[in-house]
Image 1: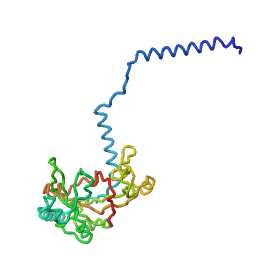
Image 2: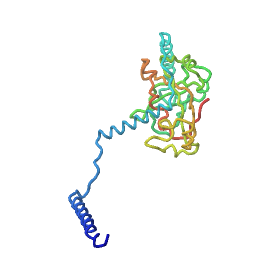
Image 3: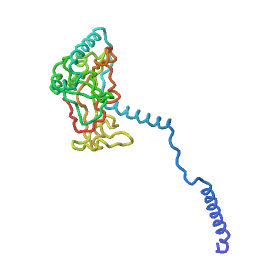
Image 4: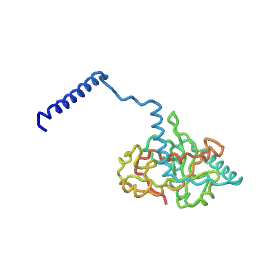
Length: 271
């Protein structure tokens, strides 16, 4: 095709482009000078926050083992009630944390600052609980901080070696009344890499009790250290906050680990 023959076609294309550019210019001129994306509504924010919480709760379930609920009898209830009475009497002197410290209890991970629950742990009693169970000599004392900043005693925590089976835990405190728990499948940063506790991926922590990582292979790929089991078995007894079995033995650890916010190197598996 000669240049002359192509000229009308080229002219038509140019005119069409000019028309499109003119139309685009008019549209821009009629649009507001500053257009910002709509802010998300409170309801959308709530939905997003709920989704995040649900995801973190699912992750937390990967790192928590809880003893099963079994059918009990009157003897189980009576035994659990007796343990609670003995413990409540034994805790009377420790409403003041100074008395707890004098008795050999020390705050677990004080560097964490604000905690949901403060554990004052006696290491020697923790060792003893590996060989015997004494309702009046728990491993840890449990406190919460009030709005006035003061710590208030709420109960205590018993421990048992992670090697214990359900039958041995049941012999201590009946599983029909109380549910023991232990922390499992944790991925933690290598010792000395404290800053890595702050790492997040897809909105979730890379390490710790709310991480989606729950296998050794995944942990190794993330450059972490895998712990199949941590700390051994634990059981909370909230004997100061109430007298009914649900209040005393009810525990929300399946939702969030007691070490919420743990961002330090003081993690050592128990035998």
